[in-house]
Length: 327
Image (tube, rainbow, N blue to C red; front, side, top):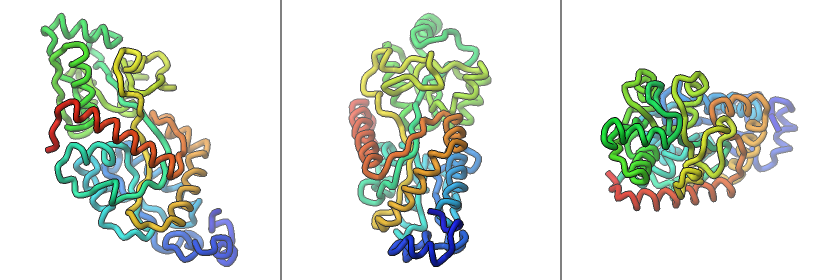
């Protein structure tokens, strides 16, 4: 219930004990804002998602909501900032899977432990990683790409990835192992420079997220040829999953969600989660998130915590099997 729609006294009575919590009982949108940390620079996809949700959450909560970009190291800097933030309901972290599930497994001393330093608040979307071919690369499918690599260079090729020690890097290895190809990862500092090289045909293929590729795929400038997940993506009904191609353990989808410092009052978490559920159900919000390549679906705290736990365990097994050592 938005305090902007009711008087201060009525709002306080409706909230009861919640009125004492920072960031909730702020009449007409006043008071200390809720910060949503984002681990990537302004202008990127995660930043755009945070700003869209923040604008709507401000109205639902009757509290200022600001997005604070702490870019760098794949979200590691923002995660460290969340760890040191006071658990008072003023600081949250909007993150996808890399910062929470992957970084702690590939970095020796990330400076945070999601299991003990953070508490999941709620999830709001999933997305898929994908293999895409550059416009100048022959082939319209994974088998055709594999045949081309074997014919043109004896089975050697380089595939772009948006960051080192990320899920795309492990997917490159899995593709190489399955088809007995010598595939090497070419790490970039984000998806934008990788996309630039793909569009310029400087590299033959890339692995990133569907949101990275979808607009250029629609424009015919590159071709998405496989996605992870148990079923095909709604935006890509003609594109097979890796599972259809014989890969295993790639059913769990990467997630987007909100995290808080451990010790954050449960009443705040419940209230924020309820507001987030309303926001992601709004037709205009759902339409904009879907256009970015996300599958929108609110998950309350318990369900989302289970998703994070299962996903982390799945990739722990894959990373260990790959022989990768934390750096």
